[in-house]
Length: 200
Ligand SMILES: Cc1cc2nc3c(=O)[nH]c(=O)nc-3n(C[C@H](O)[C@H](O)[C@H](O)COP(=O)(O)O)c2cc1C
Image (tube, rainbow, N blue to C red):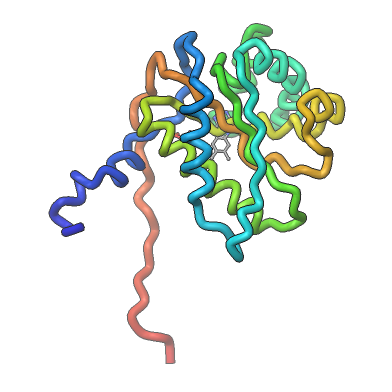
């Protein structure tokens, strides 16, 4: 596409307008729509073309809230010394017993793999970004809930969710119809070095 049309490029527009959504209306997402999102995910590139991912879709805000209640103490312990602003905000919110780490979203998709290989982590992360962009283009909100990876630390929860213990949960992604979408956040100016000639 010609450089002068860049603002009209729908892919770039979707990338720039996607936000992490943490406020959902009480409306279920259809299985077809979730499958469309996952289908976009699996078109991500993968190291050696291995497509290492597996997905578990957890459907229904009540079961997702139960998972949140189960892992919240582990997240609190993990963040107890953290001084990052978002971590401090999350610690404050977690003091409220009604606070749901998954923001009452109706769908939680766990993107995971069972390969002992960090390249498979990258593959799953790329898959997750494809999914979040596809969700956005379909009118859904999404958010990667890193805290959701604490499911991994609970053998009991893994058994409840039929997740084999050797699977690595890389990307817990919530999906739902947004009630509100946050304003864009400022992006830092990227540090870019251009190299035209190898050093002698
Ligand atoms: C690896 C990863 C973990 C994240 N974990 C959480 C989380 O546990 N809870 C949350 O509310 N947001 C989480 N986020 C969302 C980020 O806070 C969000 O992407 C960031 O603030 C930028 O906002 P944007 O996605 O709207 O551009 C996570 C994002 C990534 C990439």
